[in-house]
Length: 498
Image 1 (cartoon, one colour):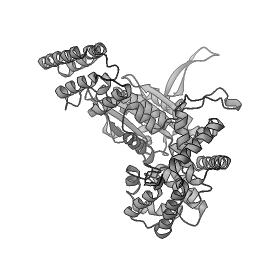
Image 2 (cartoon, helix red, strand yellow):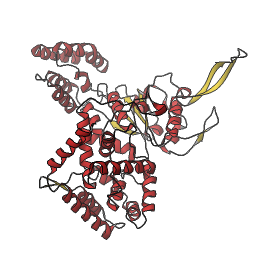
Image 3 (tube, one colour):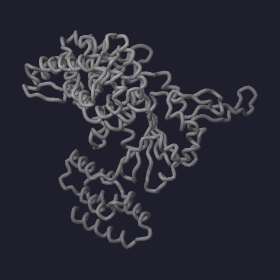
Image 4 (spheres, helix red, strand yellow):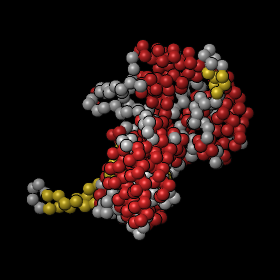
């Protein structure tokens, strides 16, 4: 972003919030410090919620608001982190204790292993460091990290996975604040505004200097971007992200009938979770997919000197990805497995059933005999089609090691898509409603994404005739009269709308 643009955004933000922009935030932060001085290390659930509310308080044009960092310190995040108050209070004693070194060590440890303080994420930890010394520390959430990257023009993303990453963020934030004379209390609002302003124009791709020249800087994808692209509530996406980053399970599968957008949602969520698009891998399972393809196996190789055939151990897709992740611990890597339940999952995953759940534990692999573990910075997302009832056949030992994110036929998703595309006829919604009324309640009911293509009646008719009707013919193989009645109703509706 050019210098005049930064100056203009600064002016706009300060005008937007008014003369009490900084003073109101200083007052709220001082109140939060008083509460911590009195109760840190022995807070009740309600007192901790009060702390989050105070820190979220600010003013805009004289109107008191409580959404400065929402939802970082409200709703699901607060409920999650206060589930274990004893552990939370022990952490607060260190974070607000006399030793800054001990506080930073705890921050670094929990950033690396989020399961040590579930729900805290980076926001709670860095909020406490900011309250200790706002002139040196910043709040490390998505908006401030991505906004600082836009503001400074750096090509490497800021990530909240280590103490070193947080130190780099704070150093660059302080340098930027000094350059533009930004008060500590302004930094989050200004960086968020810079991020939004940058999205209004096509992204500028910059070649990084040095030996990496030629690689492209990754795009910035927030949970709000995922929600917008998938026409879902941002709270839903935030819940998925929290489940995958705060607890010990770093894997999940999306399950639902055809047409609910499982693959679309999984791939968009992957772009948000991963450090960059280059850190996302996609594979589709099928009945012939094996452990040797996924983890490691023997592969034939012709000896260049003798011409004979040797068998060598080759790493599979997942082991290769884990090796990349180990070499870049501050980055996050995501593997998307489409049609996950088409393969024999127990055979494909092998000892990964244990290693996925217990990150950091290791096991000896059967071919190479090398020790192998799954790094913390690897996330696995799968999709499973429930129409063929095969989800019920998936090994329970595997299912319990994955979060299960359900996607159902959703009228609201289709409504948002229509609104985004300015469809005046609402014909796709009327077709969806008709089919849902006849099929609704069946767990295999066709989803909304069948109708997220065009509002043209001819296109909708082709979708019905060549996709939805054949699917329902299999679903209702024993009730052909029911399908005939629905076919007649759909075609009448489409005829009226054409």
